[in-house]
Image (tube, rainbow, N blue to C red):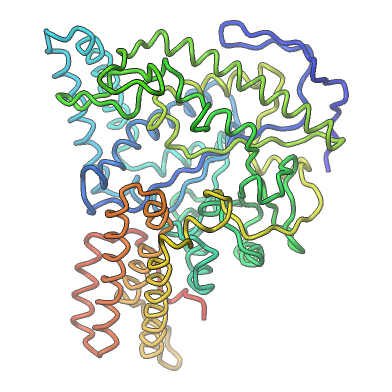
Length: 533
């Protein structure tokens, strides 16, 4: 393990903030890693508003476009190892999908038109000024999209991976809650997810963002077999001690834990930065244009009483929150290093969609904080850097856990979603037995088993059924009806195709599979022949 001198750094290290830059007398000990988890369920062809494709396009415009712009800007300054970026296969599939790319282009044009409409409202001066700024932003987004994104996200991400700007984290297909998943389907989803990343980026991720940070004892064995070297859990999974990564049980697979004291500085519903009065309010719409022209103003202020958004006020708040975050990270590194008697590792982890979609100023904050941390003497690196540089402690036994409410499995396995747990189990059993029989029948001695389009679609629909998003949305009462509809829709597709195939109606099963594939044709390389025996 790398030895890093840190004892000269103390909690009283002097540093000052000036024009978004820090000057420090001593570097902080250890390593800071920012981890972003990029995920949405499969939304293409499944509704538009208020839940459906609109969710994808809003996140794309507000978070993914600005994030890529920030990373390209910092890479052009010869900055590398900036952050660890998790990209789930299901969201990457949508960012590469021709239908979604066309839909996104139309959405951006509509945004530009809505902003232009706001500039014509002569009786509403504040909204007119807001519309001018919004129109410029929409125009920039369209230019960026047309210039860089028309062939999808994969080429852009590959460039960032190739230049070591980011480390890529992968994950299993469709983002299933793995502890509750049939072991065969769990292994299949993970291996196919890693293969999907390799096909898109010419890189196989060394680490994954475990969906929902969910863990069950023994899962590290499957990770090791798939070639996964590290994965994310929430802080309490490591019994609150996140100062170092920890090999799990008897494996060499390292679990990294989210530092809640640092992460909650940003992402706390009670005191996190996005709730500051100066920032744009996520929930308040202008009903004529669909734009969001208000600032938070106050936690208990009604939408109709919100003050107009003031970009200069917001910009000052960004600077203050960058300074605060840098201070929090420095002091946490110093304190944890003193506690454990060696340089420590601090990880802040968030959903990518926080930066821009939920928190409009998030991308600007992100760009400034990634500049400010090194200026303040904080070394920034990736999870792979942490492994390579020895920020790993002794082995640990992890409990069953997640990053959901209670840090256990209740969000995905509790009473509210018991019917979905049962549905997932039944559909998976049906799918696996049907696919097994189909492949056995197609096999012949001395010849390779041919690929089976029908079996592939059965597994595709099954994976969409068991997505962790549906029970999460039900447990949180967030578009719960849509979530239940989606889970049962994909379950119906699985049963319908499997039933036709099991009853010997191969041609009918083929037609059904083709019909469902028109809506659910993601993961084109998914191959049922690779299903574990």
